[in-house]
Image (cartoon, rainbow, N blue to C red; front, side, top):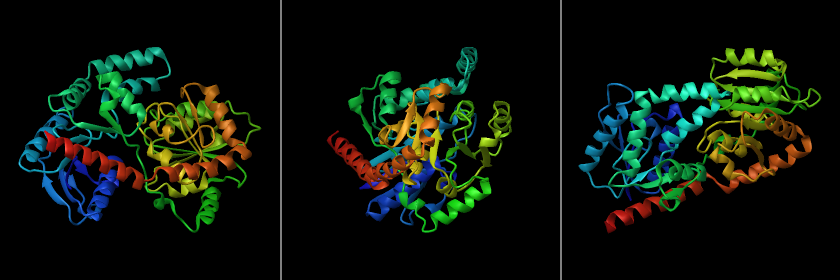
Length: 389
């Protein structure tokens, strides 16, 4: 197939969708598909040598207008070519397939309000969003993407996000294809894993017997670090528990919170790591009490490393593992007693050993190869619909 991928910036070192586009492009090229990239910026070293590049003018102006300008410019460039399938990511329109890996903006905005602990905080945040030009602009752009005269074939990475399309836009579930996110388990292969685990835990000051929960995120507030610390304060001191936090280097607020809650001795803040592989190796489980994740990659990485996952119902990745055999799910990150009970359960050695073995099996059930084949099916469906039209 002749496939066009459309995204403003493809610099995979920044992670997220940009890494995914590089992985997808390499796999498509390896299988003999002709890959085109429509973008304003890209890293050729991270993309297959056979990629055909189409530079789209980099948009300028206010942040809330830039996506409109890039999408319009991308649509004009695509009109000059004839591809079997065009694929858009995030805030574009006019493609045959749209794959919003970050979910719906309107759903994300609604879930972002949940991170505030008190009702008055949520009300104030909602009022601020109501006054934000960006919020209005992105909500209108989203309706143009999915409810315009030429509707794309929509791919989402969880059933949760498919439900959001129906809830917020009225798009019926049968019009949306679910292809869960995936990672390459090979990235976590290491013959010297026990040695690296021992060395990492020694740097943390953690004994071999202490169960360690790993928290990985850049957005501490949205991903639930404060609720996690409050829950840790409810876990009895007789239960051995340590937490390792990887993410944003600015963590002073959370260090102070840990001290006020009396759990500073249970938490080690590791700051930013370009490659957190050794942190996965050193941990015993992942705890990700997020308020919104369409399909969290850190949960999939943890499963690939044999770590049971403790997360919330607001994480689409929870659909990929069986509970409680392979991990646990709490309803609300702010429910400190429920989260504390989950932490206590996963600290139990008997549960943790069995769940670790099951987690590896869960990771094997859904790999990037499975994901890639499912995406090819979507591309084939879009090509057939395009030819029929």
